[in-house]
Length: 121
Image (cartoon, rainbow, N blue to C red; front, top):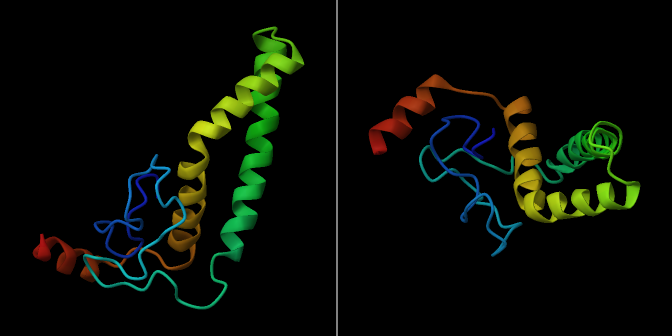
């Protein structure tokens, strides 16, 4: 999930560009380049990823700002500025992680596909 690889074979990339690439950040392969797994099993499949992303993000943002404000004794304004810088840097990775998490949660690993993907090289 963290490397944005195929949920079924763990070999093929889910996205055509790198994890921190701002060039085509929302583009996603339709099928796995290694095992030919379908990344869009049904229309609207990734709506669940949107909710997962929202929940993880909300708790992370709260924790991040509280840590900077209470532990490192930064002002609230400075804490929010650091949060915005962090979000600007990791936005694409986080979006992609939510999709990879959702796909892994619902589809899962298939050892037979991993064997095929490794054989392709």
